[in-house]
Amino acid sequence: MTLLLVTVPTGREGDAALELEWALDKVQIKRTDWKGILIAETPLSRNEAVGRIREFETQSIFKVIPLDAFVKSEKNEIIRRAGEIARKKIKPGESFAVRCRKRGGRIKSGKEIEIELGARIKEELEAVVNLSSPMWYVLIEILGKKTGIAVVKAEEIVKREVEE
Image (cartoon, rainbow, N blue to C red; front, top):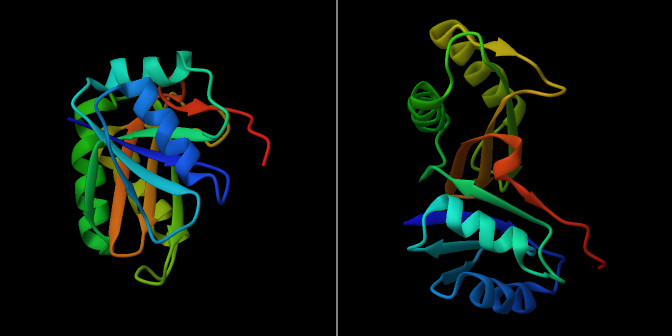
């Protein structure tokens, strides 16, 4: 099962949902409390889902991030779970950057999570911080009560230019 966080132009969520259905065939799409953000769940493998969306001629999908986990929006839980996922992927000496997007008021500071999580990964994994062009991105997407976590390489993220 693959979870995807999908960003779309505000008001085009319906169009994006149709495009996801066409591209992925089997998919469940959930709207979030935030305009322009969808969560898609597909039985396809992560690589196949990202590959299909990358090849698809989309008119209403900005970005697709494959998520590794969806957790409760509590700072300690986010840092603990993101650290576990990072340990499985990031090797000593590899570079990384932590990015946190905060939506809603459950977490006080996204920057605080970036700093604490980054320090933990640097120390525990002996990885190197590189904010401009890291090998790995540790993405924290806070959506109110739930938080998506992704530890991905840049090529795993689908980005598109879309007219609003």
